[in-house]
Image (cartoon, rainbow, N blue to C red; front, top):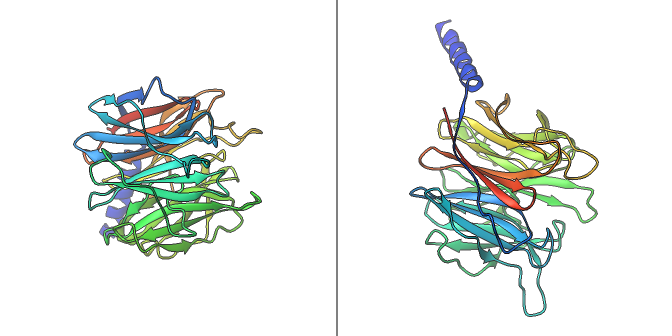
Length: 343
C-alpha cells in the first residue's frame, strides 16, 4: 500500500511541477539582420561545446529556387557570426539544384554531420551529407547516402547508448497523395544503414522527431495532414514500432520539433492551430509545451502570437550546460533564436 501511495505522490509532484514550470529567457534575437539571400527556412541547431551553438538553414531567392544553398552561423557568447555558405546543389557547370532541410548532428565520437537534401522538390530529392572533425571550421566533400535512404528529413537524429544512430525520416509520393514516416539507422560512424518501417495507418505524416525514455522506450511525434500531431511508440530501442495514432495536440500541417531533457522531461515546440485554406495559415502562433510522459502536454510559453504570418519549422536542443536553445523561421526572412532556462 505504501509503495502505491509513494508512486501516486510522485506522479502528483511531477504533474504539479510541470504545471508550475516557468521559462526564463536568457536571449532572444535574430541570428542575422542582413544576409545575401531573399528568403530562408528550415533551421537546425547543434551544441559545439564550450558555450558555442551552430545553426544552419537553407536560403536563396525562394524555396526550391536553384540558388538555394545551406547557410550556417556560430554563436559565441551572445553573438552570432555572419552567415556563410557550407553546402550547395551544384552538380556541374550546367546543372544545379536547390538544397533543402539541413540537419546538424554531432556524434559521441565528436564527428559533426551536416545532412541535407538536394533536388527539384521533396518528391524527387536525394540525401547528401558532409562531415567535420573541427566543429565546422572545415567540411568534407559532399557525399550521397546509400540508395533509397534519405537520412533525417527535418529533425535531429538521436544516438542510443549502444552507439547506434536513429534518424527520423519520411517520404512523399510522386503523386503527392501518400506521406509516410519511417526510421533509418546507422552505426556510430554513420555507416551500415538500415530502414525500419512504421505502420502509418491512414495518416499522411512526415518530419518526425524522436524522444527517449527509460528502458529502451522511444516515441516519435509527426507532422500530419489530419490537423493533429501523430505519434508512435517503441519498447525496444526503435527496432519495432506501434501503429500510428493521433495525440491531443493540434497541427496545421506544419513541422514541429521535440527534445528529451537531461532530467527526463520532454519539450515540444509547435504551432498549436489547425490548418487554413492556404498552406501558411495556422503557422502564426508558436508555443512551447512540456510533458513528463509524452502523453500529457502542458503549454508553458508562447514564442509567437499573431493573427497572420509564418513562424514555423522550429528546432530545439539542450546544450551540455543545461540551457535550451530554439530556432525557427520568422516570416521567411529571418531565423529567430531563443536561449531559455526552465525554472
